[in-house]
Image (cartoon, rainbow, N blue to C red; front, side, top):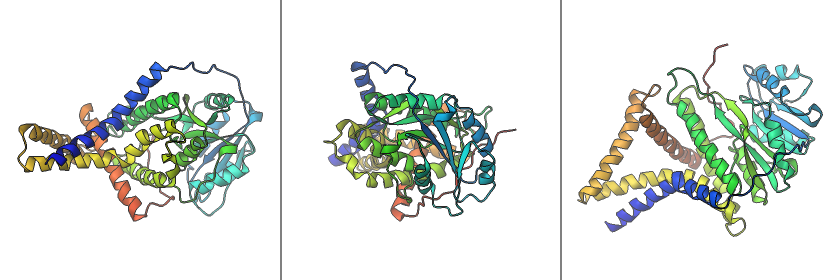
Length: 392
């Protein structure tokens, strides 16, 4: 059963490297080769701020007012809202604001097609994409624009923040915010090392000349657009002081909808971006892409399964107490997640248990996304996950 031991330790090593080892490696390299950060500048390029909105009548007016309060010269920014396929009052609300360019067609073709159409209308050199259900800080556009002073910068990824809710309700979805803090840390060290590998659609930017239209069937348009910019030899920078804030998912089941869809899109993106595996062309980009993204989707979840099954095989074939102890530890780990799922799905207050549950939940969602990808039934069109409702 020597092969089972090798399989177990290999699987554990992949998971450890993906979640901890790679981040530590890059962080230490960044410390040793610390570069002087670029000085703040007042570079103010012309900007097209693009918002794709589908049936957002409850939030869209607040969104427009949020945009009009940006601290950026009015003559250098245009706002384009595209509401294709919306069947509520979203487009009519947008039409009331003369400061905003409205693009609308009754046919719904998905976000990727909407973004492609909006970019054709955009007149300015920098494109900033933003989700309609988020609020953006007033200095975000200026903070993003300053990075483009460096001609090697092809894109800028903003930060996604999940609003923390008061009270004890929605405890498990509070881990969504913790997860994004972890992702933000990874984006920062990736950016310091070389480039962000895949921006979040809540807030990201690219040079218009580098924008490459994406197929209408693409699920993760934000990831594919930003990765194609990086593959052209440009860097995608991270700007933590430009952030889009959104409410957490209304429940863990709503969050699962998002995670499974993202995972299905991740496998689709890996296949679409085969050229990103040419490590000899951009070795640092490949290193980050493989360590951060590919292993997250196509490595760790499957290795968790392999670690459990190989450990089980060692126990069944009469291995030592050491392997029995490891298997008991794994059983306790997964049983903790099952107990929370079935008995405390929304109000767990013990933080270590919450973290265990969310870790299992994320990786299970990836496996479910893989099955959905193989079946080919994840449409680029989707019903957005419900968010926590605020009072007032």
